[in-house]
Image 1 (tube, rainbow, N blue to C red):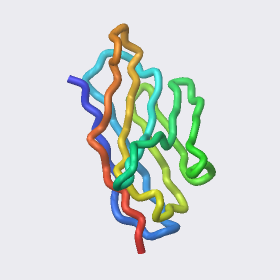
Image 2: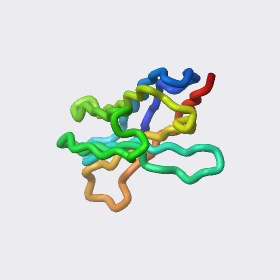
Image 3: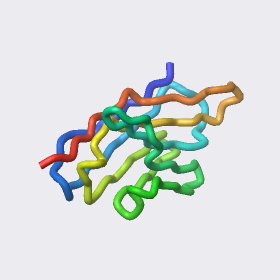
Image 4: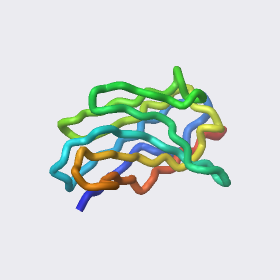
Length: 119
């Protein structure tokens, strides 16, 4: 059974930093790509950052220069370093993993971790 376990969320003041972690387990397949999404209250889930197994990254414009996504393919882990946090970064952050499996739709989501940026 595939599981994605997230950690690292919490309450932080504006300008502060948090580091989110996500560990994937339960699959024999390697990983094509990882991503972090977030969902603010009353809004749709949006892509925050994406990284391929080769290390190519992509960020939504609002976090460029502040957030950094990284991964360890061997450990099947992905991190999101969030600096200079703003109140508008508040939301539930979800880890997403796309496995290199010959099975359609073989991708998974974490349970979500709350990030609250407030003074």
